[in-house]
Length: 508
Image 1 (cartoon, rainbow, N blue to C red):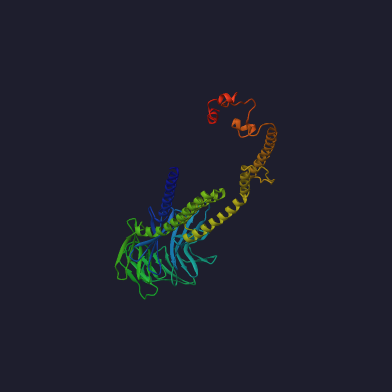
Image 2 (image 1 turned 90 degrees about the horizontal axis):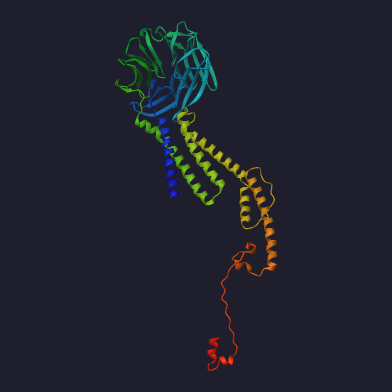
């Protein structure tokens, strides 16, 4: 009954821990709360990546050309007022954040790169001047950030190539507001609403098209340049490979633009009535509107299945190993193995919790698979070190157990041994002291028994129901029931008168 009760308690605790872990995973892969969509980018397959922010995290929602979300990527937001830029290159998403530090007067920036389901920080730096980033571009030459130095009103380009950070400044006779990377150089929007092209050498400055008039916003990517005139709902596009541009009419207030050269469609981030919407226009001119980031069951399931499966497998493996070890230990009944089983079980559970928490709530500095491999190797190393350490500490346990078995059989001639300065040393000293007293007591006992055997009759102690003579106390008495009979034959001849010899024998 007691065993069944312990089993039920163990199963309930294991279920509670498993539900807790699954809750952490679901919370880690499911964006919950209010998110503000800020950036769009595209990959080579035409999929859209929507970068949104909340108070404490950045979420990138991957959508297909039909606007269906199928994956979430999350990373830590450095600060509530951090500027955000999003870019894509060779299967990876890049997030740039720029924020003011409370500890000093400078600005800090970081660049994050996707790895599995999360992000890892690949670059951190500090900017002494007051700068605003307006565009990010990643290519084979490295990571580039374009911005405006608000103090000097100069265009600033930060290039991270290898392990070196290069800074390049462009001086203009106008005040730049937006700086975007283009195929032929930098596309700049001035504070007066005029667009300019700064060639790659940085020496020439020519208007892109004077007939376009003043622009309100300016965007660019690897496919072309996009702008919207002031007080206009039309978006104009000029592709680098196209001889002429085209116009998307009555689209609304555009916040960001991303075009797919392979899918030949465009995705626009619109701002209407204080809310963000995503508009995807197809090659035939028709488009569809989609709300900003929201929890979708399909994407949540896809994000959750892999980590939940991984954690479940590890959890079951640790649980099965713990059960097998405990059953083995019940047969062996060895303190060393019991301690190792407890350490392996607890450390295994902690390992699963660490994988879940770090991978889904600490910015995803490592991918799930790498983290699992690293943590598992560390766990094995810790287990081996623990086993060797405990084996060294408890090497005297077998000796103590062997002598305790001999003492129980009456062998008191314990060998002299240097006792270690620990609990086992104290046990060995106590055994030596006990064996010495037992030897003295046995010697006295043997002398007394030998003395008494000289004078007491053999088996005399059995009259008192004792094991030996020493157990008989002085003055102790014992009453025994005794039958006494007396036969006396005076004259045989008279007694036999008239009787046979057989009758006489019966009488006797």
